[in-house]
Length: 82
Image (cartoon, rainbow, N blue to C red):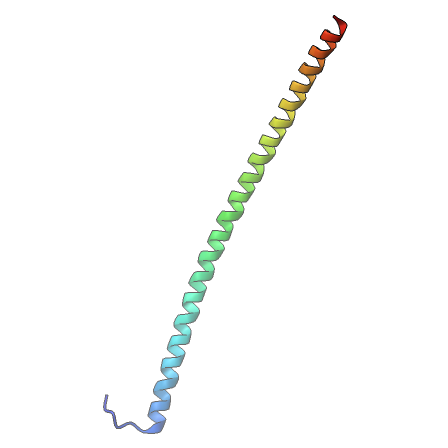
């Protein structure tokens, strides 16, 4: 590579460099996007799992509270009867 280059050659070189850099950037961005998509999918799956767990937990909590309330009310009723 000699320093004495014609202007056109320099311009061509610049264009090539720019194109290559842009392609590299795009590839990086695509890779990043894929990573993000994977992360998002994982997050979504986790969220779905969490939601299911929460629903199950909430359901069980509600059932427990209802049972406790019923037992308490029965006990109170018995106390009142006495």
